[in-house]
Amino acid sequence: MQERNEIVKSQENIEQKTNNRAVAIPLVDIYENEEAILLHADMPGVAKDRVSVNIDQGKLTLTGVRELRRDGAVQWDEIGEVEYQRTFSIPHTIDAGNVEAEFKEGVLKLILPKSASAKPRSVEIH
Amino acid sequence: MWNTANELNSMLGAMGLLRSMNRIFTDFDRHYSNSFVWKISDGAPRTSMYDSSDRLVITAELPGVKKEDLNVKVQGKYLELSGERRIDIPEGFEKRRVERDVNSFTRSFTLPYDIDVDKVDAKLESGLLTLTLPKAASEQLKQITIH
Image 1: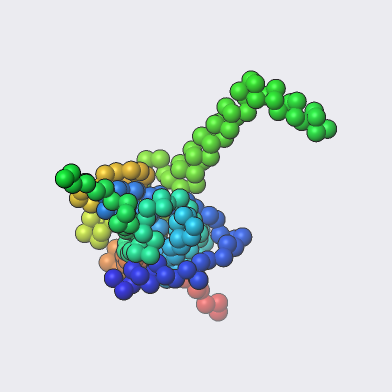
Image 2 (image 1 turned 60 degrees about the vertical axis):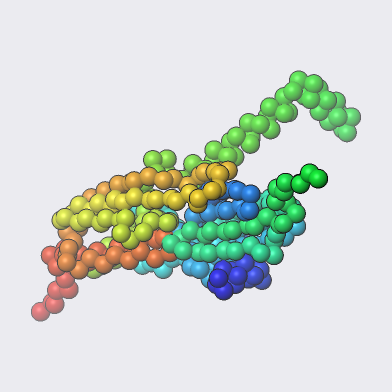
């Protein structure tokens, strides 16, 4: 839990875009129920401390930098060093202060809880 | 100049051309980003191979694949990666967007050298598999002393 919050809060170390890394779009799955939206993104080979999640003015930005150490002659290379980057618009019903993030096995998992006022409510009739 | 541009614009607008051009570009972008930059169409993992004097290093992208769902087989010059990627849809949630593949995959390689099978090292870290395949002694360069 502690770690999750750290990832969310580390807004300062958003990676600066550099010219020598290709930008890749991480593939995502999005799930939703009445309580929350879940977002799972593939970022294979990215170290946990190079992942950042930033929420600002209704925009959710995911970034992750993959650095590879390798030597020898290249035979083929489909992987390369990349900077994963993707931005989503999130509905204002998301409680941005309570977003949780987890990064495991190269997959970033976000839980975006909906704020109490956005949850469906049934009104009792007197 | 301004007038000409304006006229041209309204003419194209009337023809609905601009709108359909925009649509073409959106489709193009989407196609490009999903299948060219990022995805291999058949779902096989992307790999790379580097050749050092005493070993080959193969890396493969396997996000979300667990160690126990992954098989690596080597025989002589033949290498096979196979496995399965499972995605558990969290209970009580509805899918809104699905881009990540759920599948079983196999990718096989013919290596340029014979491999010392007993010394192969495999490491799965952060969704990236790194295979270190030491070359068999007979394949390695040997320094010859000159008399």
